[in-house]
Amino acid sequence: MIIENEAGVTPAVLAAMSSADNPRLRQVMEALVRHAHAFAREVSLTEAEFEYGVDFLNRIGQATNDSHNEAILFSDAIGFSTLVCLLNNGRNGSTETAAALLGPFWRMNSPRTQNGGTLVRSSTPGSALFANCLFLDSDRRPIAGVEVDVWHSSPVGLYENQDDTQADMNLRGKFITDSDGRISFRSVKPAGYPVPVDGPVGDMIKAQNRPHHRPAHIHFLAFRQGFKTLVTQVFVDDDEYLENDVVFGVTRALVGDYRRHEEAAPAPDVRGPWYSLDYTFVMERGDAKLPRPPIK
Image (cartoon, rainbow, N blue to C red; front, side, top):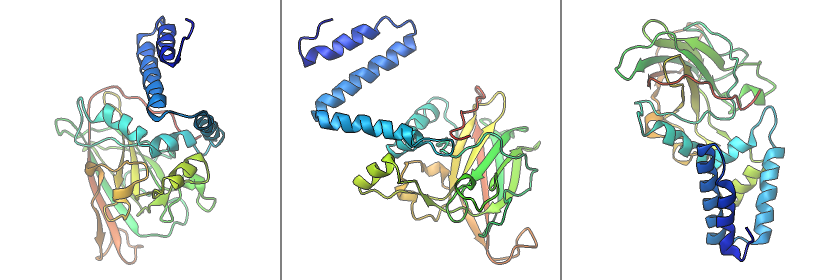
């Protein structure tokens, strides 16, 4: 199709795509083209801005490596990751436990840990945390045999793959729910942290004069055949950035009750205040699929 003017570009592209054999591919790509072209028209995109945008995308790819995924960070920072998450988990057949972002730091092979065991695998100063978690189906019955990955940042706001002072797999573990659908573990209370701003996404955040912090949270990934894989986070309720999460991941259901205690702790080696977390997760029936790890 010969293009006569700018109005003819979009129909020409859509016509070229219309013969795709895969109907879902055709639907997604046609919608992408319509919206992208409409965006360019709405803002009267200049050639210089277009070139800057292409360079920005190239820089995202260049900033991605085995230990950092800049593309995920970009998707998170514009709220796109949370939107996709809630579209797929907060409408049809939603559960009492909202899903949340996988985040860029999940690792596939966390060490198997006994119920009641610790995530702390190297010296990690901080307030002790004792967590008790219950996994139920939509009929409020306990689910035994759920594989539960747990991971979080240290009290200085770093995941172990970011921090040479932490042992490999520190503050990570994989648990199996017992016959009552429960897991328990010991760790340290996590801290919030700034997302990396030394790449193109950081340039965008700084140009928008936005806070670049995440509130403290613990990640959970629950997997069992017959149930939809649950990926979620439980946020620390006294964190100053709950209302300003840079990746828009905080939903009301995911603010946990991290309760401070002054009395004797469940472990004799704990001195001073400690924290407890009790949280109930609800899983819906569906396909059990593991996500692709964002880092190796």
